[in-house]
Every structure is written in structure tokens, then in C-alpha cells.
Length: 457
Image (cartoon, rainbow, N blue to C red; front, side, top):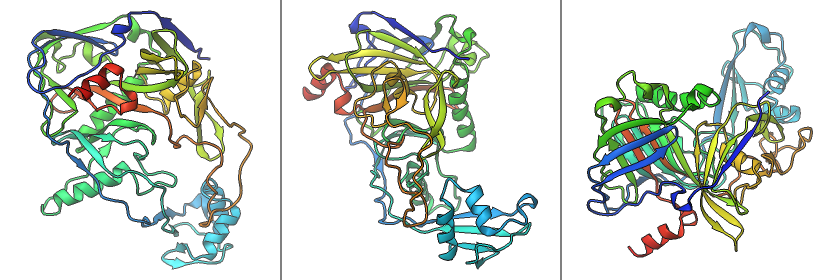
């Protein structure tokens, strides 16, 4: 059984964490040192530039209704002999209760081999093709504009706004980042004879979380970027990965990506022993570093807190696959929290969080576990548990389409908290350059010093 660990440490608040500032013209000519995850990187900074041009963005306004969905099933021998209602009410009970599937059948939303069927007692035979058509619906409001942080032939990094879901799920089947990437790709390739695959996100951010989202434009880039995230999560809990800080030395030239003001996208060239093409120690380490900003409830007295609390799943109304919570029997998870500023008057703490694993809702769970849930989080409370928790309560009332009503209790996709994926550092999936991306902060997540610097121009 896994045990949770919380390590607290006092340190100089002036060293609470790296704060990236951008400005026009050369920024530094000296050596800078910053700690990123398990890598202590020492770099000789040659020059740094930032452009004042308007940041590029894209996105099409959402139509009032989506196009609905088609779900296809091919009847196997194991399902042969079942009635139509038995098949759907048992196999897809998380989509709708028994009465809901009856309603859909009577509404001619299910076809067998291309013909609409209204008799729920129709016997199914092996090889039959069933298609359920989910009627179009008006999805909840969601932003549609995405800022481009960095882009080349292999990947694109965007600044996801809070309130926009990454991938289709639940009520959001069209209003997602994936849809906007598809629409943009079609527009860019409409005049081209060769239709290239559209970019796809390689990881997720919660709907209420803003900030850096990495998307791959090729199959090779997708597999390698996905491996960075998977490898980072897999090393958590392995003692050999925590024996000490790893040092990587290299020289680099940093420049902001063209036309992306307020964003620092740095490409580091490796030299000497720091070459990541070699079978060096770097290849055995976590290859991606993820830094977040967040606003936590209450005043965190410690300057640094390390949380190693396993995260698992429990049954929860309205969440078909289960809700992620702090659980001693869950999977290993690691977060490092650095205090940036404390606000005694508002009883909150501005923090920087580095995650070395990528469990769903990890930061929200870990901060609530130590008694400091994110300000505005409608779901998680102290202890890393949900506010309302009764796994046996299920609302069987029907929505207009025969599905379940939206649960009255909070669910993971509810917004209101302040969490921003601020910085990401990783080797380019093709060139092996180290990419360092910083997404501009929402005003509520800036330190007083950062706000002052922006005000002064």
C-alpha cells in the first residue's frame, strides 16, 4: 500500500522560483542557472529577444448547435440473441438509463443495417451493424480563440483559455481545442493538393485550466511527445530517479518566436556532454518539465512543500469512469509547491507548482490534500476529496435526449479555480533542441513585482 508524504522546507522567498521576464533587445549576457525538475541546468545565455508584435491567434466562433454524433457497433457472436434494448441498456448504461434508450429507439435514432428500428425487442444477430444517432444539441458556452505560442512543421503549442475543453467528452463534443485545430488545418490545406493530418493534443489540461498545450502535427512527433509525458509519470516513485540532482551543461541562443508578443519560446542548442542525442544520463531522466501557477486558499506557512500523495479513482455520480481523488491505494504522484507571495488580507497564497507526474487533476488534488485547495475550486476540498460524495446516489431522471440529467453535484469539468500551465521545457521531438515555452500569466496569477513591471511598460 502506498503512503503519502509531505515534505516542507523553509527557504529565502526571493528564491521561491524562476520568474521569466521578457523585454525588447538583449536581456542578458551573463550565466544564468535555474532548476527545472530533476535537472539543474547551467546555461551561458548569449542573447534574448522579445517582440512587441501582436500575438497570433486563431479560432472560429461556435455554431449554435453541433452536428450530433453517430455511434457504430458491429454485433459479435457474444451479443447475438440479445434484444435491441438489452444491448444498449446494458452495454451503454452510463449514457442513458433503460427508459432513455427506449425513448431513443422509439424516436428512430437507431438503425440496423441502415434501416430505422422502433421495436426494442428486435433480436440481434452476429454481423448486424447498429448505428445510434445522437441528436444535435446546444453545447455550454466556451471560448473559441487560441493563441499560438510556438509552431513549426512538427508541433504547435497553444495558450488554452480557461473554459475550453481539450478533447471531446460529455456535453462538449464540438467546442474543444481539437475541433479548432481541425478547422484551422482544413483552412490552411484547402488550396493544397496534399491533405496533411491535423494537429492533435498530446496531453490534457482541465477545462478550467489555462496555459500551454502541446499538439503534434506528425505521427512521429506525437509518439515522441506522448512518450515524454508517459516517461515522466512512470519514473515517479522509483527511488533511483531521486538519488540527486542531475546537471546538464550547454550553451544556447534564445529568441522569442516571431509575432508572439508576451511569450518566451526559447530553443537551446546542446554542445559537448549535454548532447541529448547521446545515450547520456539525460535519456534516463524525465524529459519534460511542467511549471504551473495557481492561487491557493489560505496562507501556506512553508516556503516549499513537496507532496507525494497517491491518486486513485472512486465511484462518483455523473463521472462514468470514476473520480480521481487522494487515495492511499492510488498511483504514485509527485508535486513540488513553491510559495511566491502570501496575501494575509485575502487569506490566499500565490504559488508555483512543478509536477513530475501527470495524474488527472493532480495539482487540485494535492493542494486540497495539504489543506489549501485552489481558490474557487468547486469540487475538491481539504483532504483531496470531493465536496459532495455519496457514490450510491444516482439521478435517474431523463434529459430531453433520453440521457441523464447533468448532475447537481460538482464535477471535474466545472471551472472557477485559478490554475495556469505557465512554462514547459522539453527536447524537440525531431531536432532534439530544448524548447522552453512560457505562456503569459493571467493578471490574478502575477506577483506584485510582475504586475508592476507590466504597468511600467
